[in-house]
Image 1 (cartoon, rainbow, N blue to C red):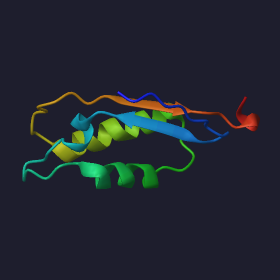
Image 2 (spheres, helix red, strand yellow):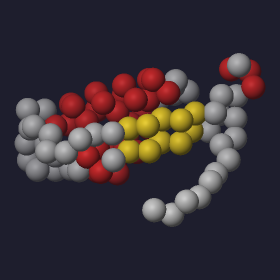
Image 3 (cartoon, rainbow, N blue to C red):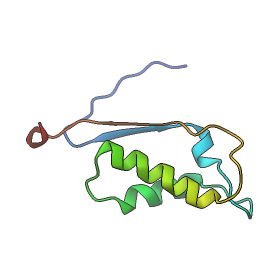
Length: 86
């Protein structure tokens, strides 16, 4: 692993997820993919970290339907609150 650092500015977020999210497939073997990640993020309007997490879990479950997961789905949402949010 390569170590690095970054600064989150107020209101910015960092989303970290395992490949189990993007690799989740549906009944027609279509993966959730990066497009699924982008769709979820674009559908949200100023969400909390918990709302982001819940939206991803619901979206991947809806996408996969009855197809069992073959990999774990790990998601971490880190958000720096804006000064007005304190």
